[in-house]
Image 1: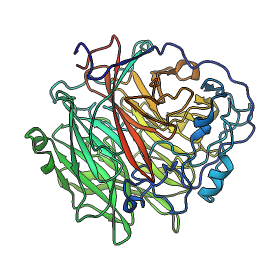
Image 2: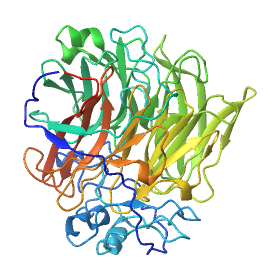
Image 3: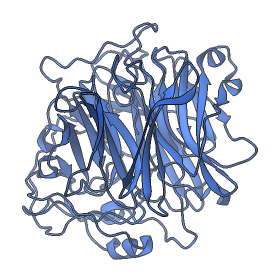
Amino acid sequence: MRSSLHLPRILLACLLPLGLSCAETVASQPDVVADGRPETAADGDAPGDADAEDGVAAEADADAPPDVPLDGMDADADTPEDGPVDGDADAPPDVAPEGDADADVDADADVPPVDSPDGDAPPEADAPADLPAEAEAEVGADADADADADADAPDAVDAPDDGGPPPGPGTYLYRRIPVGGMREANVVAFHPDGSYALVLERNEAVHVYDWATDTATRVDVRVGGRAVYLADVAFDPSASFALIVGYETVSSADTGIVIQVDDAAIRAGSPSTAFTRLGETRAGERFTALEYPPLGEGPAGDGRPVVLSQSGPTPGYIARLRELDLSTLAFAGLVEARPTSAGCDDLAFADNEFGGWGIALVCGTNGADAPYYTRIGGVGEWRAGPTATLGNTSRAARHGDGDLALAVSWSGRRLNRFEDGAWVPYSSSPGWSTLGVWDVSFSPDGRRALVVGRAGGTPLRGTALEYRYDLYTSGEITDVSIPGFGSAPYLGDSNTNLNDSAFRPGCDGGLIVGGNTSWSGSTGLLIEFEIEGGVACR
């Protein structure tokens, strides 16, 4: 490891668990906001970009008001320390009817941060604040299996470790990496050997970040000048390519797209030639996520990834799952569709009650839903989400070989869990009364996960929480937030989002991405983290 990082590193002692009880004061249930994902003002780096949503450049109405911080964090000088929400509520959050986003903002703008929920109801959700843009987490390996299955790649990571005691709380060191020209970043994924990472801006461009040289190359992936919105990325277990999904606007209609990224071209020093559009597109759909199944599992059983799309809201939302045949780079095999009560933003493979594969969806656009698809005895079936919803869910991540999945509810500010074919009751899910959360991503070995979200607190911190397998209470999830976030080199404010994280394979560190998008422009953040005393990344 290098004796020092390029910029002064900040030592964060994170041994204080978020186990403090909070006064139970709120009897209302979290609203499910009209526009699903919280908006970051205009979502566009230019006026022409403001026609997408869900973290892939959120679609902003021209009349939409400026973002309202979650929990009023920018005015919480007199609020108590951010603390956990006690998981003792007896009822999950109800879904508020779809309504006008402006009304939601106005209604919630003056609501102070809430403490833990009333014993009979979960915490109240916020209006469409400017929580992180979009959506998914595909962290190092577990979140989207971009790296954990690569047994043949050099320096391949170990298989997830489900045994033994959990690790001790980590002490995290942070450093902002200087990258010029980066706008708000949405998703990050490492190559399985950890030599470089792909960092997706919310729209238009991908940065290829080289770990050894600490430099990034920006590649514009637009075709014909059309706006393109980037939603998710995952590396193939062969390590020879990665896949990016998103959508572009063609003749005023959304069209789902898939981009293949050639590893050989990147290593040859030609990143601009590494990005190729596949012929598979779908008019009227937005490709919002993709994930590789655990080794030997999945619908086809041959490791082909599954792509999630959403269409709607008119006449209604429909979620679709399709397998991508890697031998032909065309959709083939699984094709399943289901009407949903909200737009679906992410998916995670998670076992059913018999230990077979299944796919959990999280849907938080214009409502809330969390359906599940699986096969029992070779027969496919859809299962409805919980009767009482999880709130607006944004991102999901698979642990290990699919024994469980975690999903973030940004409106309820909780970390939900799917296990043995069903969601754990919302009342049992750990949460935080004043912390904005958005994404969850596992380390390749499955022993840790990072939950990141919108900056908040006084003084301002970049929200980051550490989950350690298998400790699933608010008191066991530790606050490892980035201190001094309002000062150089971060220069964040209460509208700055941390959107995704990825652990680097083979060591105890990685990258966090995010930024701030408003009517005046967009600024991106690329942040290195390292667990002090762990396996060095440098």
